[in-house]
Figure 1 (cartoon, rainbow over the protein chains, first blue to last red):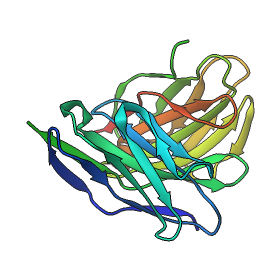
Figure 2 (tube, rainbow over the protein chains, first blue to last red):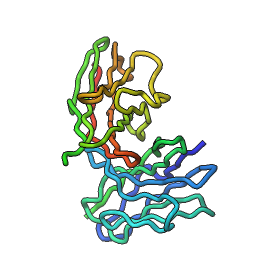
Figure 3 (cartoon, rainbow over the protein chains, first blue to last red):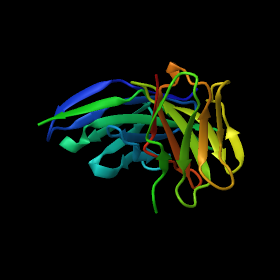
Length: 114
Length: 111
């Protein structure tokens, strides 16, 4: 069955330093993968998506993720963290059901200190 | 184009009451999804609807929960005889075909 594992429940960085949020997936076929961000008491916003085109995917707000089939990973990175990046981040896989049935990871809370 | 709208944003119900959560999809979107987010967890798929049809309800609890998406009006997620374990954030998403756009959620508290 398709699933995603987010390896860190919390990540703390200082403003201006790089961000790395880790995600590993399990899938028996080439998956569609997404990263969503959730700010406190807000809905979810799509950061970026991978759908079997380029393996390096660029998203909004300077985020990008690289699909590595050999490592079954889809880690999210950003060169320089901003205070406004503090939020919950979800790695998501879409099941091959004929419609976009999303399976969410448990989330990583990113804390950014001044 | 307004985003996906959900109301109420916060809902408090006593055990045994009914909860009705509404979702108005984006204009032109005919697909609606409902998800539940328990505290400290990711979102879990509940149900997928198109206008007047339930396409997949494999994530819905077998009892007390129902969903509809009528020809006119918002999609409704209905929870009968709520229990404390129903306290959660309920999100809906709409889609024109494939990619989903999420609403701000309804936070249900059962006292």
